[in-house]
Image (cartoon, rainbow, N blue to C red; front, side, top):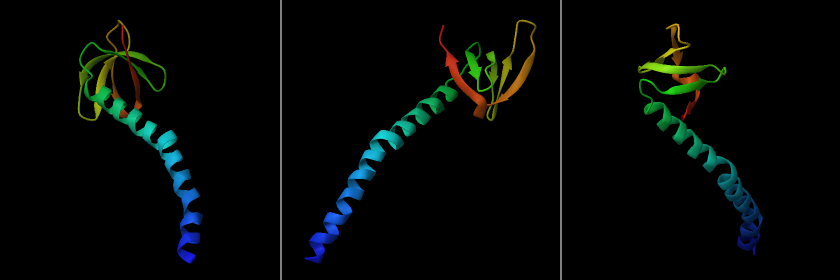
Length: 90
C-alpha cells in the first residue's frame, strides 16, 4: 500500500519536471550551443552586433577577444566574446 502511494505522490513531480525540461532547459541548451558555434565560426569581414548594440566588422578573431572595426575610419577595438550578441547575414 505504501509503495503505491509513494509512486502516486512522486508521479506529478516527475511529469512537472519533464514538462519544465522540454519547455525551458532544452531550448536554452540548443540556443547556447548555436551561439557558441557562431562565435567559433567568426572570420575576418563578418558583421556582428554586440550586446551594447554596436554594429562592427570582424578584423581578427582571437582566443578570448575579437578585434573589430567600428566604422570606416579604421577605429579598431577589442571586444570580449561574451559580449557578441549575433552575426549579421547580409
